[in-house]
Length: 250
Image 1: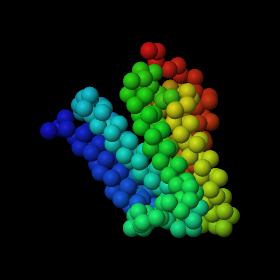
Image 2: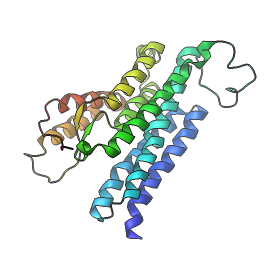
Image 3: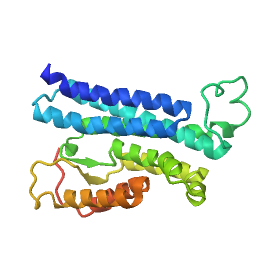
């Protein structure tokens, strides 16, 4: 039973992702974002639990990727679909009206919000590559799917909790959202080496970059609240430029 604890934690990640999808479809993007956050929390601790309990397994590895596809792939993709629909038409996409007779035949423009679903496709492809890429055992190549999910989901949280007309005019502009979709799909699968927050020890010398990153995260959250999320993602990628640890060879 003890060896199943990591898989149970991973399953909670998957469950949170499923709930997030339901809220995203209903138009409640804020609640969807919080459930994705809960899922990412479980995603962080399932691997830690597996290492502590010496319960790593191939099933756990595959289950983890499948859960991430849902929580960090499909859920943020549906939130992006909602944001795009809101930017184009001024209202969330309603599951009760989206299949009304003739609703999707009036113009090609009605289909543009579905561009957001490319985030789910790019996330699934990134996770599939991760599972077979031996270079990513102690680091990442390309933006991790949870980080990308946080980047997308920061938008409804900023608009809800820190709303300003200036922020809304940018964050809900169709070209900004389309561009962010394209950039996130690119970053997920780019040959971009990024350090991982995996501490093999707690000494300062070998973990200096990680401690600098975490200190910057705390400061950003205190000062910026939800605006800190995209700032932290950029901070993460910038710090990775100074990361000198070599990637594991094939």
